[in-house]
Image (cartoon, rainbow, N blue to C red; front, side, top):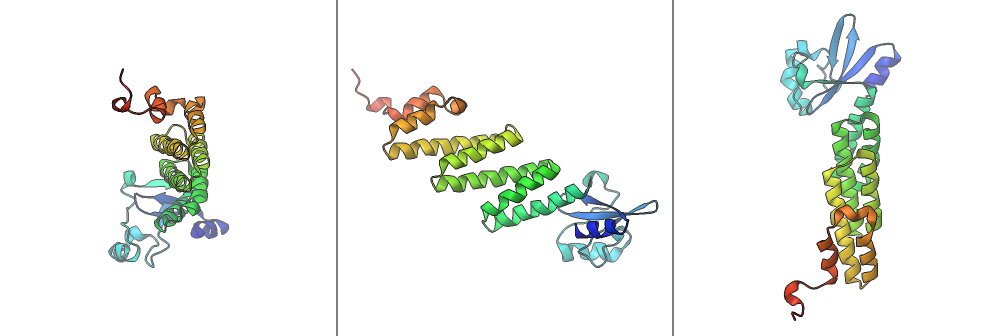
Length: 215
């Protein structure tokens, strides 16, 4: 991203390329479009340099996708490159278990690019944060977060499943605390009618059939 900013500041036409496991820049020189891998000392016009392809895996851990492999390369602009940087921030935060830190870059990355990669990162970040809130008995915040994400992203089975699980846990928590009225109110909410069928609504308040007085 820094290369793109600096190159454009001196009038160069610079773009970006995303592959399945990496990203790098391109620069337009006359009629040629040249790949530039900024983390490799041989990275300028790497397709023409054997030493680059020999060292690339060792230096960066990624495989180089040459310009001839069009289907494995996706052209991205500055918004796309910045979204990839933010995607890395999301991944690093999740790897170190700092799920709260993953949410802001995930939202910004989705806002910038709106592609499947950014969407998946946002779904993961939202889901993880909702689970953390639920573990702290902050069920209302957790469900609200999932519902906001649903309005932003549209229907998503993973977010819907997480929401159902958290609402179930909240009902159980209220019952264990002896607050049956609150549990009943939660189950009866029209906005969440799609998450519970009639049998589920009755189950918490009545013992199984085998335990009822059979007359």
